[in-house]
Length: 386
Image 1 (cartoon, rainbow, N blue to C red):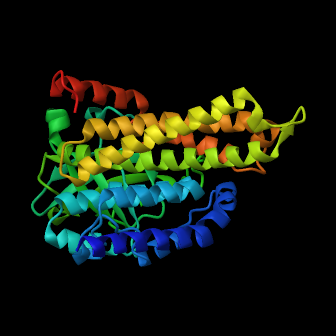
Image 2 (cartoon, rainbow, N blue to C red; image 1 turned 180 degrees about the vertical axis):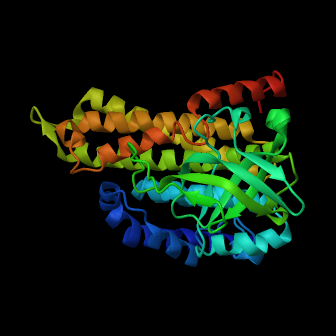
């Protein structure tokens, strides 16, 4: 059984490597320049099984571990971080809460078409006045006989303009603040549900779509409630913790690719009649890149292993996401410095890596929030850190 599992795992990485080489890497710069959503590639990844790596076979998944999934995301991010971000928003933020908290009917109806790539998912949490502070959420859901009526708006919704399904948190008991949040799954085409048509023009991750969602008296059947009423905080917590592993994998992938460019460059570029790798300052820069990327990858592997083993891993996920994102920003910054004018030029992808890396410090919880989580979890667990 273990041998069969490893064979499937190897086949996944072989398939991913071929797909990334043929379909993702060749268009990464162009789609970034045009801010073009890679819809065809997302659909094809679904057909290849790459969107269902950590999910049950009965819904079309491959039923592999999260370490395999984050490994795939990392390889995807090396070629195109925007595509990797699209996948994480779809797979971690949208499919995960349906799989973890949904009914069998919800899984059959919604999870299966998302894993196949037939339908695109989006996670709509952030609001104009509510980001890290979910207690200030203004979107409300009022219960009626057999449905809820949702009113509000969501911004910075990754995949927002292309999604078929939306995970939407709303307050069902506003007086309870965080303990009065419920989570719903909405479908494109529901009356009162629309996107503004605005596409955020971003610093980086430009081919990853980011839109706005408007809810104007949307009648949502009670069958679209994920989990239990007023227990949305637990769902959001679990979903975001899981997604942080995906974000960490994106950061590690970006940093690793930037480092590889640097290694190739210092072996061919000469200054003062010497190759760059002969200079101590350049060696120091490369050594720091290698050490920090390896450390970030190990933190990611540890957190993914803990998730796969069913252990509590919120602290470890935050550590991986925080460290990897800050490493990616520093490594891409240093890579541009090492290349000098060439690095600053848009003829090379280093400036894209640098722009893309910054979002990993913001999405799925800012670096400041990650530090709060790590400290709180450390205190909660006691003096011994595990």
